[in-house]
Every structure is written in C-alpha cells, then in structure tokens.
Image (cartoon, rainbow over all chains, first blue to last red):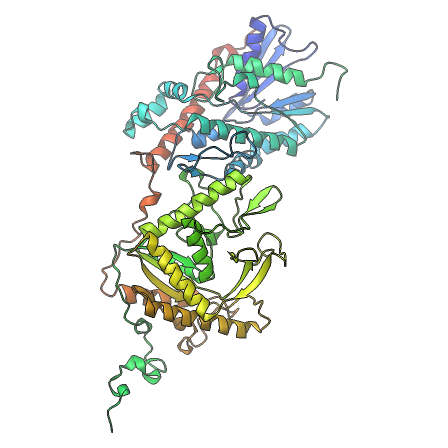
Length: 265
Length: 371
C-alpha cells in the first residue's frame, strides 16, 4: 500500500500476469491499496483477476484488510526530494555523503555545501512527522502479528527526461509561462546531486523501517544505470514516477522477502 | 581667577553637568575618526552583546553583510541563534585572540592542531561547538570549514565597516598551539583534557597587540575597512581565575577597555564606541540590567544603539525601512529570482499531484477488470 508510487507496483503486477511470469508466489493473495488525496483505491487480486473498489477514506478499509494480512509492504510518498529539490533555487549546492566511495576527494569548493545532517533531518522528518503514516503504522502494529516491509522511493530520472516530461504537465507549463520562464530554462537540479539526495531519502526510509521493527526493501539495484539515475526502460510518464516494468521488478524484490509457506521467520 | 584648561572645557567634561544631571547619551562618544552613510555596509563580530548590532542595523534599514546563511532550498538549516546573529556563522567571539585566529585560519596562516572532536559518529568544530548540524565525515567537515572561512573573509572583503565587541580576557586554549576556544572544552561540547587544554587570562598588552593584529589582518583583505571597537557591558558568567566573579569581571572589562582605547588611538580609522560606559555608568541608575544583574535590558540596548546611530550618522537621512539586504544572498542561478524558482517548485508539486491522481483514475482500474 501507499501513495502514487504504488501505482507502478500495481501495474507491474498486471505486467507480470500479462507476460506470463508468476504473478505472485503460490498461495499468496495480493491486494494493493492506493491512498490518494481524498480517497483510496483497493485492488484485490483473485484467481479470476483484479477487483477494484473505491473507498471514501483509507482508514477503515485498511483496518479491514489488515485483519487478514500476514505481510504488508508500504511505499509511502517518495516524492519529498522532488518537491524540494528537483527545481533549483539559490546557489548551486552539494551534499557530501558520509562513507561513500570517492566522496572524500570530490572537488566541492565551487559549490555551496549543505550539511548532510540537514538533508538527513528533512528526509527523516518527512516520515516521522506525517500523521497519516503514523496512523498506518499504528494500524499495522495492532491486531494479529504480521511482517512489515518499507519500500524505498524510485531513483531520479535524468534531467533530459525530466524536462521532456515537464513539457507535458499542463499546469506546470501554464505556470511557467505565467512566470515568463521558457521550459528549456527551468533550472533542474543536477543529476549527480539528485542521486545523492535520493540516497539520503532512501536512508531515511531505511531508518524509519528500523525504528518501527520493519524490513527495508530498497529500490532494485537493476533499475539504476552507471551514473545513478533510473534506467530509461523504467522511466514513467511524468517527471518523477517509474513505470510498470520498474513495478514488476520491485515486486520480485517484495515477493522474495515473503517466505514460502511454512518458512516463516 | 587664573585661566586653566577646565575653564574652556565643554559641559561633557564635567561630571556634575553631564552625568549628575542632563545626561545625554548621544554626547558620550568622542567625535569618531570617520562618519558613516547609508551606503556603508556592516559586518559585526564579538561577544553576545555584539549580536544586537545586526538586528538594530537591519531594523533601521542599514546594509548588513551576511555571507553565510541557510540555503534557500533548505530553510530549516538554521543553527543556534548565536550563529545566525553575525555576518558569518562564527558565533560569539569573546576574545580578540580568537578573532585574530579566525582571520588567520581564513588566510591560511594558522591551522589549529585540534581540528575537530568526535562524538557519536559526528565531528564537532572546537571553534563552533554549538553547531546543530555537525559533519559526518572528515571530508564533509573540511569542506564545511573551508566554506565557513571563505564566508568570513568574504564578509571582511565586501563590508566597509567592521564592528567588533570585546567580551572577555579569559579563555581556554589548546596546549598544542594556543588555539583559542570560544568555550571551555566539555561545557558546550567535547571533553576537557587538562593535558591538552589550559586557562589563559590575557593582559592589556596581549589584547592590544591582538587588536592591532586583527585590524592588520582584516585590512590585508580590505584596506579601506573602517573598524569600530566596543566593550561588552555583560559581566562574566563564570571565572576560572580563582577570584570572585565580580573582581574577575572588573579586571576583564578594565583590560578590554584600556586595550580598545590604545588600539583606537594608535590605528587610523579605528573608533572606540562607549557601549560599556553607557550601560554600566551610574547614570543608568542600575536600571540597565535585567533582574539577574548580568543581561542588559532591551531598553538599555536601544539607548546604546540610538547613541551609536547619532555618533556615526549625525546627518543621515532616514534609511529605507526593511534594509537593503545583501547581494551575496541573492540567487546565483543566473537570472531567475528565488521567488520565481519557488513558484516553479510549487507548480511542479501541484502538477505531480494532479498527474498521479489522474493516473490512478485509470479506467481499467476504477471500472474493475479481470486480469
């Protein structure tokens, strides 16, 4: 369950069925829940296919679903860094990741350095101070024992792909025009920096999982190219989302986490 | 009656005429060696009392240099208040020696042996021990330190006036190289080690020498820099001298006052402004301090700053309310203002929300579908 990024998983499930891959491990019933701004979508898979329901709110349906759930994979938000730092503002800046290869020697003096701790705090606060997420975690911990996995956000799309997709965002184009900013001049934050910010955000999810006794399932490494951005075959239809192939790939990772019947941990 | 020098002296030379009665704060300071205008740009440093300078200058619309502040995309990056109160994030600088060493570090002529302290996977800056956002690696620590030192020198470079407030003579220093810490190791952060840390109580000669060196170093960056020295009227929180804190405070302030006088008399374009006297003199009737008899009350600070303005801006027209800001805080992205960039980010967030919602309205899902 989760927000918009769950949609790729849901469509990925469809893709697995369409391509003849095992949709899910044997004996596993899968249900997706998409929490939207004002309502929720619940997509249950049955031997006969998807059954989709709309619900006016997410809380009650979630409580009902949890009564039968043994495993919950939660993909909450994931666009925090995009909302904050996909479009640049102020001086060009950078963040130095602790312990990462090559970070100690990377020349950074021409850029403003924002302390890692500042970005880390933002990342963690975006999860820790979210009342909806807190309620979801409360519901997940109540009732029958169940295993919980936290999924990470998808890696960033490269600048060219972002710019191309922004051109199709009607509202954004309209606003940029009002502001007198040609689309080709919209300042997109550098790919290498957005990759570092994504890593910090992913670490925030990892810490959140640890704080809540959950497993963190990071974004599939196969989805990232050598420069750290999302591979082209996984680009979604807008500037920040991944596509159904990414969802299918991530589902593999999720299903690997779920033990086969009788193998519980 | 014979003629004598007091015959022609003005009222301000007589206690009975200028302190016992008719006290006028604006007449206390001597005529400064320079006057200032609205075009002047200020930087400030010093003890906690110095932090008032920024707020009053900015509040009155004068130009105050800020070369180190939160990045606009990371507005939550706000350090403890005393790091945000000055032109760069150096925090309170209590001694002239610490200011000298800060400039020397910026200029590359001094590298403290105690570069950082470690605690719980973080690196503490011994010279800014109260920083909230500590580095996590040596590489990051050094990059942030270089950035800070560049900001210090940049502030000196682009300012036309430097207001420095002397706070203390007492300091704790490293036994390795006499590097001055703003606080005794172990109080704000770090750990006290008697083999590595020792107490110093600077003399008049040392403080005077340090002030001369401070001005010299600052003018090596900005030869036309005008300097205003003040002495903080705030007593010591505590003394390590073994004396009563009242006696230690008197020694400290006396030394600083004399050193400030000597430096301002011997160096060109260095003025002494009597903030200390305006607060601690008997004309204030003991009303200048808060109930703790240490912190200066807001009204007294306001009086000091009013006298400051009338001393250095005697004929200034009213400055523009809200101040001029500082060019170094303007966006560096080329031509888009920070506000336009912010508007674009908000538009992006709205567009993404709308796009997600649209996508999740996928007919194939909402309508229900068999796989």
